[in-house]
Image 1 (cartoon, rainbow, N blue to C red):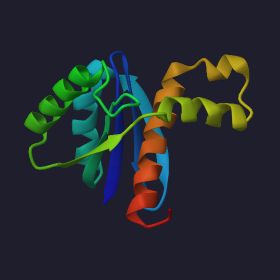
Image 2 (image 1 turned 90 degrees about the vertical axis):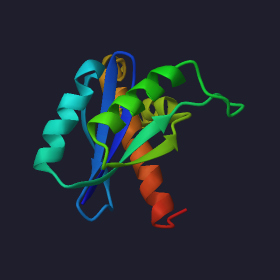
Image 3 (image 1 turned 90 degrees about the horizontal axis):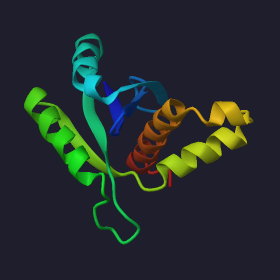
Image 4 (image 1 turned 180 degrees about the vertical axis):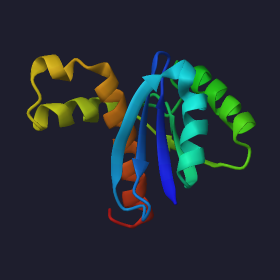
Length: 139
């Protein structure tokens, strides 16, 4: 079964997924946030998913960030839509910065690095890979 990670935002949502053995995280897509639940409904019908990671936005001091109410609203809607799906909240601090740095390191041109949809997808992938690393004691 797969694990899906969701980097939910006001406009866009980045989605990443594992392979069936839960060893590798890969970016799946970035979609308009208002379509997230319908996208996931279709995806869950096609793929076996064990759990979903949803980013938990925090400030440096550990307090909820200003986007926390938006994410909490999404989590509530997700639970209502998929009551049997396990949810794991995961710290998403620095994932956007790490995603941007990954884009630089991989040699993407400046124009490509301005693609915010790609940043969201990479952020979800980073969250998921961090989770897998901790789960598999790779740290």
